[in-house]
Length: 263
Image (tube, rainbow, N blue to C red; front, top):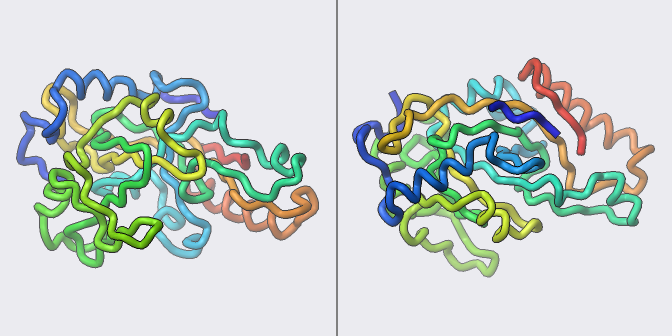
């Protein structure tokens, strides 16, 4: 689908140590190496998804994605296997109007993430509090508690409003959020009707792992529009196509040179 390219809220107080509490250093490095873009199998990508509901607002609809990501402490992404996603026309040919994608939202920003930026890999949504410690829990909010993010990573504290499907509170993540599994382990355990959550540091220049470089800028190298619900007559539904074409044009204008496809 795409060719893979071969002063912060995140604490920099430990430049010679790593955050892991439950995995040894060599295990960390060995697993992180598997996450390099060139080491991921064909059709496997890391993506940050956004919803069409925010098309008239939200930073990723008003500014270039790479510029936005470089100001975020931690962003949630997903590892997606496009080989398992049925193309829109194939879905319609079977008389279906809905498909599972393994993604949270329907617009996927395909990313090249330096492996040292990855701080947590989970086969399900873990309700990570991405902007904890900032005013209004906003990525651009004033820092109110500079230690909150580090402590959340260490203790496994989830979002305050995190609840399970049965209505019960989502528990703390045992062992904290700083856990690394291999991409294949994540894919093997991911239910395509849901999505996995891969936590990555957006800001460059943050020292996380001993013996590895500081974090680098995340690169956007593709945009994929993958609607989950499809119209009964996809070929002739003009409103459906106009809506997504407008979104595509807007995102391409903000991110020149980045290919955008409808899947």
